[in-house]
Length: 380
Image (cartoon, rainbow, N blue to C red; front, side, top):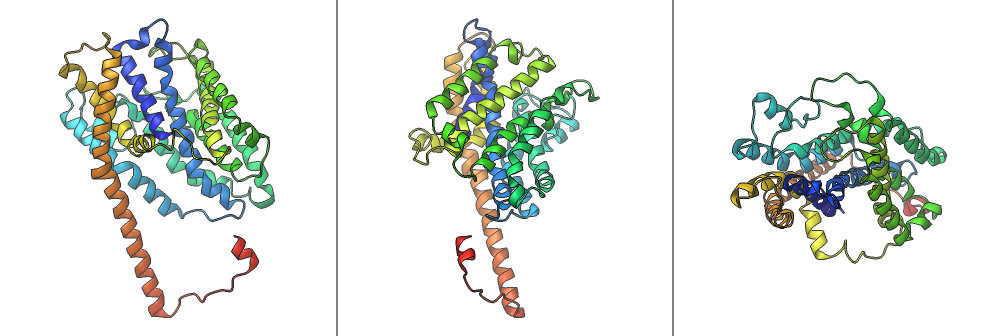
């Protein structure tokens, strides 16, 4: 699903820079493929909230905050920093002063004016996502009282917070010129909440939502309707014209419904292998999805001069195919040279650290004695 979301972001950027979004029939559809970001955020909400949802029901423990943040940093920062440095150094339309460098390296683009530079403008969503990563331990702390018998209240509370955040755009937050507070985390929290609710529901017994999720055709229809409505003025005007606050709220609500409808059948429905999403091609694109996301705009900007295509003048299909192929090639290199080596290095470091700790306990004679296995512990 991450791979398809990354391709959706690529499609909307290609459509905009080739002028396809101006087509009277399909333009609004191509332009609204930016709703793929809702899927990204919901996936993060689901995957990262699962340990907290399980711990609230006595089914496990949450990872230590330090380990969690270290794993998030190792997953996001190395490949991102490589992309930022190379793009700012070598892409002609990118670059800037110290402020641009620091804001992009620090993922603070949504807070610092005029720092979303060429080849890196899509990183606003990564800035929001990293803000969610940082805030997640505090959200979990706020939910610490909803455990055991009161865990049933976690879904209603999440839904209430999400509904409350739909009004964030109406809050008069003072910001510098060219900075808009609706691009900050609170405005997009309903998209993360869609995945967090799924993480909670996945641990519950079969209920109405589970039965609904197993009706894949119906869930697909809900997703299509949500996407179709987002293509209308209900979710804002076409192009880069800023939406009215109520249109922004409608778009966020529709994105939450869209992401929930796409993910619920996978999370709550049948556990059988998905014919498309579990195919080798889909899994490969998913493996390279992060690199596809961080590199595709730089690749796209190079394609126009290389093939002599004037931006905003057409050639949508050709540019889409070439951008997809070349971006996947660069993404595969990013995965092989940066992402996977970082993951393996972190895994080896943690293994060595555990081994040293175990040797230290054995040497001091403080190793824990084996405990008897009871029916309860075996069940856990």
